[in-house]
Length: 323
Image 1 (cartoon, helix red, strand yellow):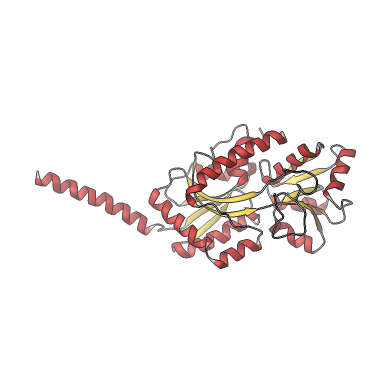
Image 2 (tube, helix red, strand yellow):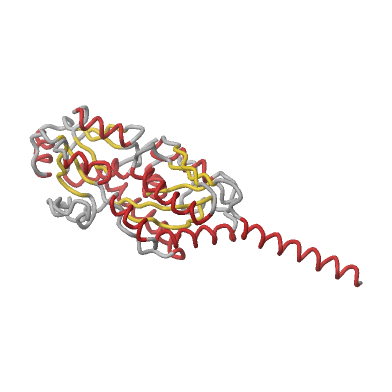
């Protein structure tokens, strides 16, 4: 009997000790953070700011890997199917973790079930921008032209299912106009198309468009969020411009696979919380137009579920659908 008890005690000690060692030593190698969009996009920049700050605290590099395509679904699905050991994470967005569920008929992952949410860097509105030499001075001008010339105006986006795509679709619906959506693989490509006159306008993040606004290459007609952007406070909201209730605010979410080890997740959560309290990180994010989130870790799953319902209603109102 004493031998049996001793064996049990040794077994328990080994298991418990292994768990502590696992939690205490993670990470022992570089961590991969998958960005489901191209390099230089707002999601990519946000991920690199967060990743660099977390790496300093974790003692291992966090390598940002861009896996763009299908409105962010390709890279996001890759993480959903990864091992839950904490070495594969994603910087999710409102598109990949909320909009795509309602927009795509066959989404290969379930945002509400396939992820473990770690932390939320914040929110960012999008600005409706046109070439500076375009004849439209206000959103009303743009809509008036669209009404008089159905399907003559086009808007670009970083791909089907992105917040820029849905913002354009919602504007079409609320303004009762017909315009053509032109999806690109990356937001930078869409922005280049606006600058070159291949498409007429797009909704895009402040960090990408502010330099062009300052150089008088682009003009911002409206902001997609319910309140004005801190990065461009002079730009009126779409709601202020005649469409009450228009509110499309993008957000970012650091997440891992649903089966993420609980001890590892706690280490990541604590690291993320420390990063978000760092004044230097806060300043970097603010410079990108990212406004701080208020949700605590315990509220993240409920937040995503609420966003899934909200965006399903928006997608239905906009009449958007992707096969």
